[in-house]
Length: 376
Image (tube, rainbow, N blue to C red; front, side):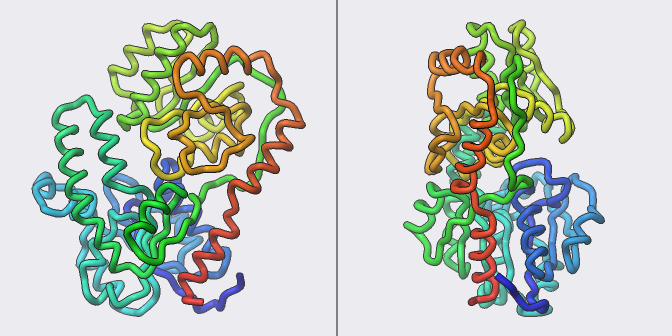
């Protein structure tokens, strides 16, 4: 879809979206790149809290502004969710009021803006990265620290209460079929727009290797819980398992040390993780919460050989021919025993390529987003 060169768009991001090294910011960053390719003049507004300013973003954006996220403990006692009330900037509001360009809010995190009448009159689109209260509910179940668990449970209630602010948006972009079904049953003008990511071409190595890989941000309860589950399964499998990810907690490190065929790669850089994914014989991805489209699944399907998932990882997704579904430790053991002797050959790579074209169409997603931005 071609557009005129005077098409402007404000994007309000919950975090600085570069480097694109975790799920949410990957989606934001590569959406920025695709829109910039279409000629959109992007005015990017980032909340900052620990990540450095990025000159690289300026190569895609017409302007880039940063706002401090208010992370004081007192925010925990606000009636609004912490992820929302800590992202409330008067400076941002004033900047948005200088024109009438459409606004894309990245996540419910940034929707405090929708409480202002001046913004409600605008063409505001919200990217829903998750059904947030469901996501936090699962995090609370997985959390072992009592104080963190209490905080997460409080956020669940606040997020449920705040979510109807989405009625003030012109459009909502759901990331998966499951999320689309949820939002469209409650709000108007909901569209399914798949997650954006770095990869659009299948690039898989033929052959085989001697290890299975699980990767994820290991500081997140959902992921370290999944890692512990897999480590336990591999106690009875005579195959090497590598667990790779950012900031593994001490209790996970201790569990891994107890199992001789399991290795931990602590906080790998992007290239190391990419190499681990490409060279693994099997990539295994499991989750306890069926929320959104996991970007690590896309990364694996574009670059990795055999892929094992549980049903929650792919709920609402048509992954026929792309993954093997394993829902308990016995089925994991059986699948690993079956797949380890098999080569991933050229025929399987071509099959993956054809199936991915049906599964993931970023051009179609961007066409829809362009229509919403331009009201066409």
